[in-house]
Image 1: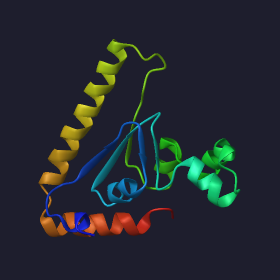
Image 2: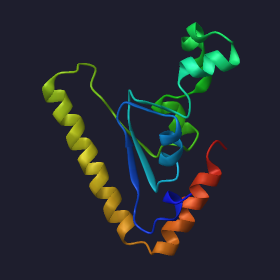
Image 3: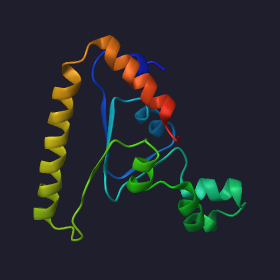
Length: 133
């Protein structure tokens, strides 16, 4: 609740696994950027499987049902931008991803900085209310 009322631009980046209460906090940001192969959910697939199927070993089935990939979350309006990742994880490719991420963050800061506090808060509220539609 406190984060939703901050008067400064909030940009969140999911680079690996965003889950639990932290995932809820990320949702109230002005912009959510997610690496293509990251996952983002309020509950781990193991936890979901334990609750829904009463069997944590069904975590793969749970992960499918949860729709926690960058592509799924963009479709639901949870994530604003996906940063593509190369298939090979070598140092040069990592630097390429960082350059793309830096460019996206700078563009987002510029866009959000010209808005008034009231506009940012209203947009944040409306964005949060539309998630999942």
